[in-house]
Image (cartoon, rainbow, N blue to C red; front, side):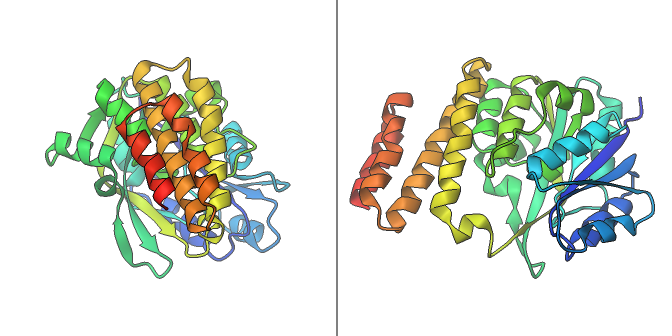
Length: 308
């Protein structure tokens, strides 16, 4: 069966970049079934720019956050598969084709992801995702130069959950499965994509990976993470705390991946606190790791915070 991919683009005050994102979808070698832009209460010309494109469906909502916007687009979509793109990023020309052709060939794939590029706001290449993540390097080694590889073993699954290389704009997921899982969690500002992806992995057996760039993720110098790293890392831990609660019912490899990701999140929060001069708070941030995941790394993390 030929898959129909609906592309959902959440946008908030994205007048400067939205046209580029939309054009990258319109220029696909395999046409998207539809393009849905969800304007999340913008106060600039975001809605007008989206409305100016023929064939682009515009949904407007009060400002409710990216998760609500993505979920609204998914609910309105008529395709049998969903793909997502943030308004400041863009797709590579064959992004949809590389997934759609594989979906048509292999009905046993639960969802698909792939590599992507990091670029700065000037467009300079900063690196690629699979090469910069342990799970990505694991899959590149397994692929041994092939364009496609499948995540399916417990070790691969745990590594992917712990430190995944596929961002939201490389994800292709059956709409029915997305709706079944309840979509992206609301009420979280950081790590909401990891929350959904992990729940998706917990329901999956075979994950298709395309070992070439499917798009570009733009690194912003003024992002919330860089403006207030302590607040961002606290929010990261808060989101993962909820995910850890859910993980009690996940398959063992997924639980291990969530535990490893939480350990990294607590360490990152400790580092942010330590850099801001909050040494005692930094130690307290990583202390729960000892009881949750006792290992040498946990002890090392605590000693690192004590030394500053």
